[in-house]
Length: 335
Image 1 (cartoon, helix red, strand yellow):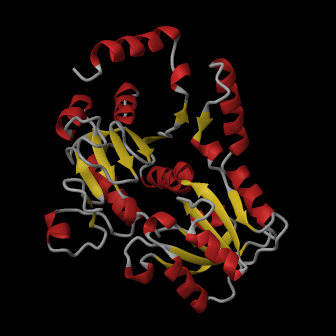
Image 2 (cartoon, rainbow, N blue to C red):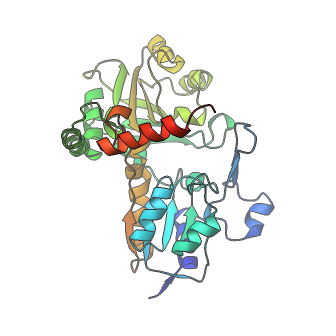
Image 3 (cartoon, rainbow, N blue to C red):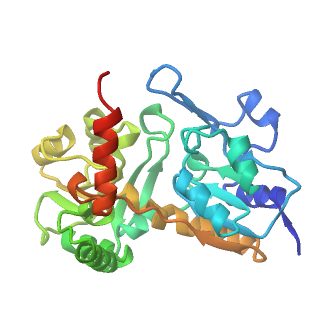
Protein backbone atom coordinates (compact mmCIF):
# COMPACT_ATOMS: atom_id res chain seq x y z
CA UNK A 1 0.00 0.00 0.00
CA UNK A 2 1.26 3.47 -0.86
CA UNK A 3 1.54 5.75 2.17
CA UNK A 4 1.14 9.51 1.95
CA UNK A 5 1.90 12.36 4.34
CA UNK A 6 -1.82 12.68 5.08
CA UNK A 7 -1.89 9.02 6.14
CA UNK A 8 0.84 9.68 8.68
CA UNK A 9 -1.13 12.68 9.97
CA UNK A 10 -4.17 10.46 10.43
CA UNK A 11 -2.06 7.85 12.23
CA UNK A 12 -0.64 10.48 14.60
CA UNK A 13 -4.15 11.79 15.24
CA UNK A 14 -5.29 8.26 16.10
CA UNK A 15 -2.23 7.71 18.32
CA UNK A 16 -2.95 10.91 20.26
CA UNK A 17 -6.72 10.28 20.47
CA UNK A 18 -7.73 13.09 18.14
CA UNK A 19 -5.38 15.78 19.44
CA UNK A 20 -3.72 16.72 16.15
CA UNK A 21 -4.59 19.79 14.09
CA UNK A 22 -6.30 18.71 10.87
CA UNK A 23 -7.13 22.16 9.52
CA UNK A 24 -7.42 25.88 10.38
CA UNK A 25 -10.66 25.37 12.28
CA UNK A 26 -8.83 23.20 14.81
CA UNK A 27 -6.67 26.07 16.01
CA UNK A 28 -8.21 29.32 14.81
CA UNK A 29 -11.25 28.94 17.03
CA UNK A 30 -9.28 27.95 20.11
CA UNK A 31 -10.99 24.57 20.20
CA UNK A 32 -7.83 22.47 20.46
CA UNK A 33 -6.32 22.79 23.97
CA UNK A 34 -3.07 21.29 22.72
CA UNK A 35 -2.37 24.28 20.50
CA UNK A 36 -0.35 26.02 23.19
CA UNK A 37 1.63 29.26 23.18
CA UNK A 38 4.78 29.10 25.31
CA UNK A 39 6.71 32.18 26.25
CA UNK A 40 9.03 33.58 28.91
CA UNK A 41 8.16 37.03 27.54
CA UNK A 42 11.50 37.34 25.79
CA UNK A 43 10.61 39.51 22.77
CA UNK A 44 10.19 37.49 19.59
CA UNK A 45 10.97 34.11 21.21
CA UNK A 46 7.50 32.74 21.92
CA UNK A 47 6.42 29.54 20.20
CA UNK A 48 3.03 28.08 19.35
CA UNK A 49 2.81 24.29 19.47
CA UNK A 50 0.69 22.99 16.57
CA UNK A 51 0.47 19.21 16.91
CA UNK A 52 0.33 17.59 13.51
CA UNK A 53 1.75 18.52 10.12
CA UNK A 54 3.98 21.59 10.31
CA UNK A 55 5.46 21.50 6.83
CA UNK A 56 4.96 19.35 3.76
CA UNK A 57 2.56 18.30 1.02
CA UNK A 58 -0.22 16.07 2.41
CA UNK A 59 -0.35 14.22 -0.90
CA UNK A 60 3.37 13.42 -1.02
CA UNK A 61 4.27 9.73 -0.95
CA UNK A 62 6.49 8.67 1.96
CA UNK A 63 8.43 5.48 2.58
CA UNK A 64 10.79 6.27 5.45
CA UNK A 65 10.07 8.17 8.68
CA UNK A 66 12.45 9.35 11.39
CA UNK A 67 11.24 9.87 14.97
CA UNK A 68 13.26 12.15 17.23
CA UNK A 69 12.96 14.37 20.26
CA UNK A 70 14.32 17.74 19.12
CA UNK A 71 15.04 18.69 15.52
CA UNK A 72 18.34 20.34 14.62
CA UNK A 73 20.23 21.02 11.41
CA UNK A 74 22.21 17.85 12.10
CA UNK A 75 18.96 15.87 12.12
CA UNK A 76 17.84 17.47 8.86
CA UNK A 77 21.18 16.61 7.25
CA UNK A 78 20.98 13.02 8.51
CA UNK A 79 17.45 12.77 7.15
CA UNK A 80 18.59 14.01 3.75
CA UNK A 81 21.59 11.70 3.73
CA UNK A 82 19.65 8.56 4.68
CA UNK A 83 16.60 8.93 2.47
CA UNK A 84 14.07 9.95 5.12
CA UNK A 85 10.83 11.37 3.73
CA UNK A 86 9.22 12.66 6.93
CA UNK A 87 10.43 13.75 10.36
CA UNK A 88 8.24 13.33 13.42
CA UNK A 89 9.67 15.39 16.25
CA UNK A 90 8.33 15.23 19.78
CA UNK A 91 9.27 18.75 20.79
CA UNK A 92 7.84 21.82 19.05
CA UNK A 93 9.80 23.36 16.20
CA UNK A 94 10.49 27.02 15.53
CA UNK A 95 11.51 28.27 12.13
CA UNK A 96 15.27 28.89 11.90
CA UNK A 97 15.79 27.95 15.57
CA UNK A 98 15.41 24.22 14.80
CA UNK A 99 16.80 24.39 11.29
CA UNK A 100 20.23 25.97 11.55
CA UNK A 101 18.98 29.50 10.93
CA UNK A 102 17.43 28.43 7.62
CA UNK A 103 13.76 28.80 6.66
CA UNK A 104 11.68 25.61 6.69
CA UNK A 105 10.50 26.06 3.11
CA UNK A 106 14.09 26.24 1.93
CA UNK A 107 15.71 23.54 4.06
CA UNK A 108 12.82 21.07 3.99
CA UNK A 109 12.33 21.84 0.33
CA UNK A 110 15.91 20.93 -0.58
CA UNK A 111 15.49 17.43 0.86
CA UNK A 112 11.75 17.14 0.11
CA UNK A 113 10.93 16.48 3.78
CA UNK A 114 7.62 16.60 5.60
CA UNK A 115 7.71 17.72 9.23
CA UNK A 116 5.41 16.85 12.15
CA UNK A 117 5.40 17.83 15.83
CA UNK A 118 3.38 16.50 18.78
CA UNK A 119 4.68 17.34 22.29
CA UNK A 120 1.81 18.24 24.67
CA UNK A 121 -0.59 16.32 22.42
CA UNK A 122 1.45 13.17 23.09
CA UNK A 123 1.93 13.71 26.82
CA UNK A 124 -0.44 11.72 28.98
CA UNK A 125 -1.31 9.22 26.24
CA UNK A 126 0.50 6.30 27.88
CA UNK A 127 1.84 5.21 31.31
CA UNK A 128 5.30 4.30 30.04
CA UNK A 129 7.36 6.86 31.95
CA UNK A 130 5.98 5.77 35.34
CA UNK A 131 6.41 2.11 34.37
CA UNK A 132 10.04 2.65 33.43
CA UNK A 133 10.58 4.27 36.82
CA UNK A 134 8.98 1.33 38.61
CA UNK A 135 5.53 2.50 39.66
CA UNK A 136 1.91 2.35 38.53
CA UNK A 137 -0.03 5.63 38.82
CA UNK A 138 -3.39 5.68 40.53
CA UNK A 139 -3.62 9.47 40.19
CA UNK A 140 -2.70 11.45 37.07
CA UNK A 141 -3.10 15.15 36.40
CA UNK A 142 -1.74 16.78 33.22
CA UNK A 143 -2.59 20.29 34.41
CA UNK A 144 -1.81 20.31 38.14
CA UNK A 145 -2.57 23.63 39.77
CA UNK A 146 -4.46 24.60 36.62
CA UNK A 147 -1.25 24.83 34.59
CA UNK A 148 -1.46 22.99 31.25
CA UNK A 149 1.54 20.67 30.92
CA UNK A 150 2.26 20.41 34.65
CA UNK A 151 2.02 16.63 34.74
CA UNK A 152 1.86 14.88 38.12
CA UNK A 153 1.58 11.20 38.94
CA UNK A 154 1.01 9.54 42.27
CA UNK A 155 1.83 5.88 41.97
CA UNK A 156 2.40 2.65 43.86
CA UNK A 157 5.72 0.90 43.43
CA UNK A 158 5.59 -2.21 41.26
CA UNK A 159 5.83 -5.49 43.22
CA UNK A 160 9.48 -5.99 42.27
CA UNK A 161 10.44 -2.51 43.50
CA UNK A 162 11.07 -2.73 47.23
CA UNK A 163 13.77 -0.10 47.73
CA UNK A 164 15.18 3.06 46.19
CA UNK A 165 18.10 0.98 44.96
CA UNK A 166 15.74 -1.33 43.09
CA UNK A 167 14.33 1.66 41.24
CA UNK A 168 17.75 3.04 40.30
CA UNK A 169 19.00 -0.36 39.13
CA UNK A 170 15.84 -0.79 37.04
CA UNK A 171 16.48 2.51 35.27
CA UNK A 172 20.09 1.58 34.53
CA UNK A 173 18.95 -1.70 33.00
CA UNK A 174 16.07 -0.33 30.93
CA UNK A 175 18.04 2.69 29.70
CA UNK A 176 20.99 0.50 28.67
CA UNK A 177 23.27 2.65 30.82
CA UNK A 178 26.15 0.20 30.89
CA UNK A 179 26.44 0.20 27.09
CA UNK A 180 26.45 4.00 27.04
CA UNK A 181 29.15 3.98 29.72
CA UNK A 182 31.30 1.62 27.65
CA UNK A 183 30.85 3.80 24.55
CA UNK A 184 31.92 6.85 26.56
CA UNK A 185 35.01 5.09 27.92
CA UNK A 186 35.95 3.97 24.42
CA UNK A 187 35.55 7.49 23.05
CA UNK A 188 37.67 8.91 25.85
CA UNK A 189 40.46 6.51 24.93
CA UNK A 190 40.22 7.09 21.17
CA UNK A 191 40.25 10.86 21.60
CA UNK A 192 42.81 10.73 24.43
CA UNK A 193 40.44 12.89 26.43
CA UNK A 194 39.52 11.57 29.91
CA UNK A 195 37.70 14.87 30.55
CA UNK A 196 35.07 14.09 27.90
CA UNK A 197 31.53 13.90 29.34
CA UNK A 198 28.21 12.70 27.89
CA UNK A 199 24.71 13.57 29.05
CA UNK A 200 23.14 10.16 29.62
CA UNK A 201 25.99 9.12 31.93
CA UNK A 202 26.69 12.45 33.63
CA UNK A 203 23.06 12.96 34.66
CA UNK A 204 21.89 9.38 35.20
CA UNK A 205 19.57 8.65 38.12
CA UNK A 206 20.73 10.11 41.42
CA UNK A 207 19.60 9.97 45.04
CA UNK A 208 19.57 13.24 47.00
CA UNK A 209 17.60 12.39 50.14
CA UNK A 210 17.52 8.89 51.63
CA UNK A 211 19.54 5.73 51.13
CA UNK A 212 19.49 3.01 48.48
CA UNK A 213 18.17 0.52 51.03
CA UNK A 214 15.24 2.75 52.05
CA UNK A 215 11.85 1.17 51.32
CA UNK A 216 9.57 2.78 48.75
CA UNK A 217 5.87 2.22 48.21
CA UNK A 218 4.05 5.39 47.22
CA UNK A 219 5.63 7.97 44.93
CA UNK A 220 4.91 11.48 43.79
CA UNK A 221 6.37 11.76 40.28
CA UNK A 222 6.60 15.18 38.65
CA UNK A 223 8.76 17.27 36.35
CA UNK A 224 10.43 20.45 37.66
CA UNK A 225 10.58 22.16 34.26
CA UNK A 226 6.77 22.23 34.06
CA UNK A 227 6.56 24.71 36.93
CA UNK A 228 5.85 22.29 39.78
CA UNK A 229 6.98 24.04 42.96
CA UNK A 230 7.04 23.74 46.75
CA UNK A 231 3.49 25.05 47.09
CA UNK A 232 2.31 22.34 44.72
CA UNK A 233 4.22 19.73 46.71
CA UNK A 234 2.65 20.84 49.98
CA UNK A 235 -0.81 20.67 48.39
CA UNK A 236 -0.10 17.25 46.87
CA UNK A 237 1.00 15.91 50.26
CA UNK A 238 -2.28 17.08 51.79
CA UNK A 239 -4.17 15.26 49.06
CA UNK A 240 -1.97 12.14 49.25
CA UNK A 241 -0.35 11.86 52.70
CA UNK A 242 0.66 8.26 51.93
CA UNK A 243 3.53 9.45 49.67
CA UNK A 244 6.95 8.37 50.96
CA UNK A 245 9.14 9.18 47.95
CA UNK A 246 9.57 12.11 45.60
CA UNK A 247 10.66 11.25 42.07
CA UNK A 248 11.51 13.91 39.50
CA UNK A 249 12.45 13.19 35.92
CA UNK A 250 12.98 14.70 32.47
CA UNK A 251 14.46 17.76 34.19
CA UNK A 252 16.08 17.67 37.60
CA UNK A 253 17.09 19.80 40.54
CA UNK A 254 20.40 20.01 42.35
CA UNK A 255 21.50 20.15 46.02
CA UNK A 256 20.12 23.18 47.80
CA UNK A 257 16.96 23.39 45.68
CA UNK A 258 13.80 24.14 47.67
CA UNK A 259 12.07 20.94 46.51
CA UNK A 260 14.91 18.83 47.90
CA UNK A 261 14.90 20.72 51.17
CA UNK A 262 11.13 20.41 51.48
CA UNK A 263 11.38 16.64 50.93
CA UNK A 264 14.04 16.44 53.63
CA UNK A 265 11.81 18.45 55.97
CA UNK A 266 8.89 16.11 55.31
CA UNK A 267 11.02 12.98 55.78
CA UNK A 268 10.64 11.84 52.17
CA UNK A 269 13.10 10.12 49.87
CA UNK A 270 14.10 12.28 46.91
CA UNK A 271 15.39 10.76 43.69
CA UNK A 272 16.17 12.20 40.29
CA UNK A 273 15.25 9.66 37.64
CA UNK A 274 15.83 9.84 33.91
CA UNK A 275 17.06 13.11 32.45
CA UNK A 276 15.63 14.72 29.33
CA UNK A 277 18.30 12.90 27.32
CA UNK A 278 16.44 9.64 27.98
CA UNK A 279 13.08 10.81 26.64
CA UNK A 280 13.92 9.26 23.28
CA UNK A 281 13.44 5.91 25.04
CA UNK A 282 10.49 7.03 27.19
CA UNK A 283 8.39 8.69 24.48
CA UNK A 284 10.29 8.25 21.23
CA UNK A 285 10.41 4.45 21.13
CA UNK A 286 6.68 3.96 21.89
CA UNK A 287 5.77 6.64 19.34
CA UNK A 288 7.95 5.06 16.65
CA UNK A 289 6.47 1.63 17.36
CA UNK A 290 2.94 3.02 17.25
CA UNK A 291 3.63 4.57 13.84
CA UNK A 292 4.96 1.21 12.64
CA UNK A 293 1.86 -0.54 14.00
CA UNK A 294 -0.47 1.89 12.22
CA UNK A 295 1.50 2.01 8.96
CA UNK A 296 3.52 -1.21 8.68
CA UNK A 297 4.54 -0.34 5.11
CA UNK A 298 6.76 2.47 6.41
CA UNK A 299 10.40 2.09 7.37
CA UNK A 300 10.72 3.75 10.77
CA UNK A 301 14.05 4.85 12.23
CA UNK A 302 14.94 6.68 15.43
CA UNK A 303 17.28 9.65 15.49
CA UNK A 304 18.93 9.69 18.92
CA UNK A 305 20.95 12.79 19.73
CA UNK A 306 24.13 12.43 21.78
CA UNK A 307 25.68 15.48 23.43
CA UNK A 308 29.28 15.53 24.63
CA UNK A 309 31.44 18.07 26.42
CA UNK A 310 35.09 18.39 25.33
CA UNK A 311 37.66 20.92 26.60
CA UNK A 312 38.56 23.57 24.03
CA UNK A 313 42.19 22.45 24.21
CA UNK A 314 41.26 18.94 23.04
CA UNK A 315 38.59 19.52 20.41
CA UNK A 316 39.22 18.06 16.97
CA UNK A 317 42.71 17.63 15.54
CA UNK A 318 45.78 19.80 16.15
CA UNK A 319 45.09 21.39 12.77
CA UNK A 320 41.50 22.16 13.81
CA UNK A 321 42.71 23.85 16.99
CA UNK A 322 45.32 25.85 15.07
CA UNK A 323 42.59 26.95 12.66
CA UNK A 324 40.51 28.21 15.60
CA UNK A 325 43.43 30.09 17.11
CA UNK A 326 44.40 31.70 13.81
CA UNK A 327 40.88 32.82 12.91
CA UNK A 328 40.21 34.16 16.42
CA UNK A 329 43.51 36.06 16.52
CA UNK A 330 43.22 37.53 13.04
CA UNK A 331 39.53 38.42 12.90
CA UNK A 332 37.54 37.95 16.10
CA UNK A 333 38.61 40.86 18.25
CA UNK A 334 37.74 44.49 18.76
CA UNK A 335 38.86 46.45 15.73
